[in-house]
Each structure stands twice: as structure tokens, then as C-alpha cells.
Amino acid sequence: MRPIDLIPGFAPTRGVRREPDDSFTVTVKPPAFMGLPQVEVRLTRRQYLNYLRWINGDAMIQELLPELSADDREKLLSGIGDEDFRRLARDEDDQ
Image (cartoon, rainbow, N blue to C red; front, top):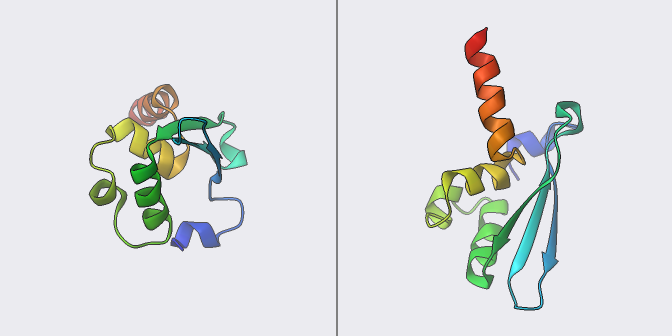
């Protein structure tokens, strides 16, 4: 378990749905205080097994899922989608 998961209200909420083609759709909702929408990332069976290894703390996400884009890895990490991440980064730069 990652340290952020131990702080109530700060960890994203995760779910998974198995698709008919044997792939998996992982849903990630950012912490409620952020007010951002849920995102989805579609993973193959092998990728999903590596995702579970990451959740269990076996290795870093970029080591287990290097073929995913940085945006998709960020979605899995935080639940923050591409546009929201760029908007938040811009807002931070403006301050």
C-alpha cells in the first residue's frame, strides 16, 4: 500500500471492469476535494496483471507499464485526465 492510500480522502477511488474481449477497463476517480471527473484506461490482460503488481507495490508503474503513454500512467496514478492535468499545471505556473 502506498502512503497516500493511508490518508483518508486523499487517495483516488479505483474500479475495474472486465470487457468481453478479455481486456480490462480501469476506472480512477480523483479525490473528491479535487472535483474532477472519473477517467478510464483500457488494459490488456497482461497489462492488467502488471497494474495489479503496481497496486501491490512490487515496482514503479513506469517499470511495469512502460508501453503506456505518460498520460495513461498519470490517469492510473492520480485519476487526473490529460486536459485537467494540463489545466492544473497552467494554473500553478500562473501563480
